[in-house]
Image 1 (tube, rainbow, N blue to C red):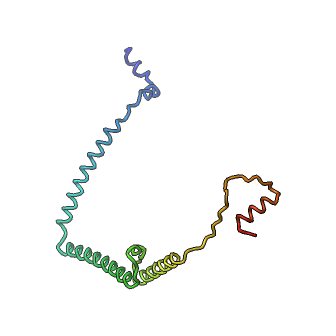
Image 2 (image 1 turned 180 degrees about the vertical axis):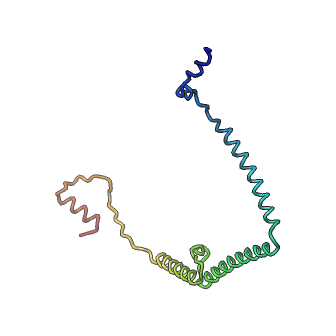
Image 3 (image 1 turned 45 degrees about the vertical axis):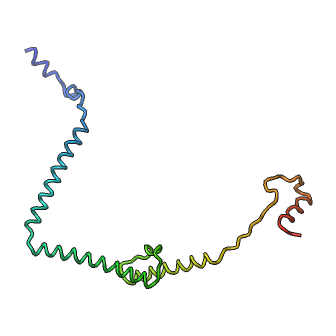
Length: 161
């Protein structure tokens, strides 16, 4: 009888005070990785079953859709190349021409062509920049700041008489 009251004396607070077990995260990661690998196998088997259950007409329709997609991509690429050739866009600038329609490609090619012309004109006309050379730069002259010596030194440096 002495054992029974001791068991009843355990309160819920004491029962929850037991140290919690720490989770082994590496083991959990391995477990989920194994499940994911099993699911990949199941998914591929499901895809095979679905492929086998398709009718011949469905398979042909999918092949036709893929062929149409490829043909439209090639048509767009051909159209882009024709616009590039028509406008004489150099190879270095061809990636700047973009668009999905003939009109968009034309507009883009015209913009690139105008940028090329503007760049060429800027390269031909050298910009004139004034350069000033101040003799003895960095050295401090022995001139008074309010004297005529400073004024004459500046006039000589700037070529003013």
